[in-house]
Length: 442
Image (cartoon, rainbow, N blue to C red):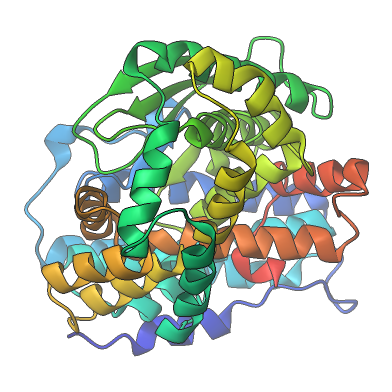
């Protein structure tokens, strides 16, 4: 494995903070230099995207910045050295901006770009054939240090589930049997999902102002490793895809509607485009490199946004009153169902452990699948699907659970609690519409 010392050095060299001894320079000169760096950053990541599938999740910036696919060359030392030198030059340019006086939000912009560029170094290392250990990759690509949890931690939760679930036998089998009563019939999926997304949108618009032209379309797809995906196209428009490879449970309607739509990814990208790109002219936000720190903010806010939109018992009551009847499901066991789900959510970190051990070469694929069955309580089919995701997206899995926990702790430690909903929405909007890095949330 290639040396990764460079990456840890880079993490320590760029700490951009306001200083009273900075030279008094015209602010417009600082903006000019920052915008120049941002444009070169866009060109760089778009070019790297030609060499790595799934890297560019969205781009709605100037057409002139996009490389031509005909420009792609075979990956060799010349290409890699060029990418590295260009990234280092941009990092050095950012470092030089310490001599300028900057506002707090501009300093946040510096930090965002520096962390994004450090992740670019990690991607260059990977496309050159290098490999990271799971925790190294999480630090370099996502500016995060996910916790390690023991089997004992998960077994305590599983023991609680054992006492709650009806029937006898293995907990993993009983939970599947219990949850199967809450599958949305295929012919009612679109009706239920549209009702869920309309409710999520209504609740979001009560607190956040979005452009009048914001819109989305929903498609149902198959043969994907993920359950849902938001493809942001720019101009406040998203394509939301829902994967129907596996049965979709009633709770997933709100999960997907909020996470992919309101107040999740669609709202996040819409606010970034309109507030940071259109109003401020910060063009770096017009490109979304998936394997970078921005994804932890995106996934963390999308998951926590479910709780923001449906505080307390709001979600259960809405689903029992609206979604269960639309799906033709009996709501008599709904309260027990959500008590079970509350515990299973605490098992999501088991998926991180499966990914860590598989990617670090400790476990073979089948061992990781068995662990997902034993500690995530997945069916064999769902565990195999999850492994497909891990193989494709690697340490990205941390962005959902650890990302949510970082966002939750940040908001609630700043008084954005369930009994203070307006403050919670205010802090949530701040995360969606200003420069953020995961390490800033700690």
